[in-house]
Length: 353
Image 1 (cartoon, one colour):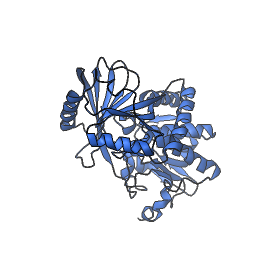
Image 2: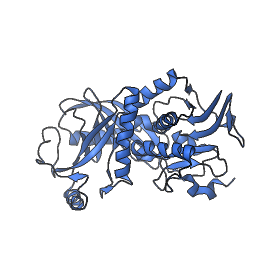
Image 3: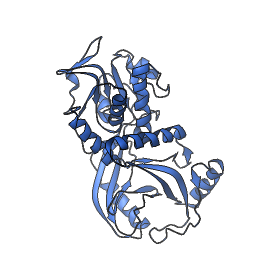
Image 4: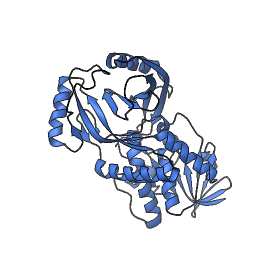
């Protein structure tokens, strides 16, 4: 079998890379082992324009958000699904100081921060003492529907191999790569945490962190696609189900859900929600984050047919479409990848044996 591109992984990066390869008229095969607890399948799918306690704008957010809107609408039309909702985040202030911080930042950043007309309008569902602010617009991506629909499309077209990729079976040459009976010009690794041990990319400064979430059922809170936040986030799914999380654990023993997270989050919910709830599921995944909090995009400085699209961390829903497109443009037209994301910034450490 001959293809232009072998894509390893069908998370959010592998999905959008495949989408843009198809648009460019390049043939490809995706290899993915369908891990249900991958970072892409555990994430809430929220694109939040501000970040951290200081409520600073996310890196490149205006450009990324505009691109994301178009990208998710386009791929949704291709798949016949609606996977993008424009929404707002109700940010409850946990302390008077956080209220003051929000008000101060709003004076400087009125694009995404606003105060509501009535700060008491959520008291029937939530306990809160210090009011709330609004973060808007935010985007909510239905990752489950998107990844599942795209997987069906790949399978129907014969573009998916459901298998664990065996790195030892990969053979490199001056003209391309060979894997089992597949010959390709390029291979791109979009395999999340698996790249941590990839011989070609393990020297990159990954900084993995573990995230955990609960899936709860509760009645009474409107299913309006509004996202609620008070230390933890409450993100609507469907049929009175909500995604609750997430944690950011930089030191962890394993990838399994942790009892302490569940107990702590349950106590927070009991203190915050006025509605009874039932915990239906507890999930955990390791995010492929980076020390610089910038993605890894591009081709290996020593092996020009071997590339990577990874390291999106918590911002995968906004970064993956944008940099998937950049990588395909780089392949087709040699347009450079944004320097802050191009892995050639690590040429020295990637060239080490």
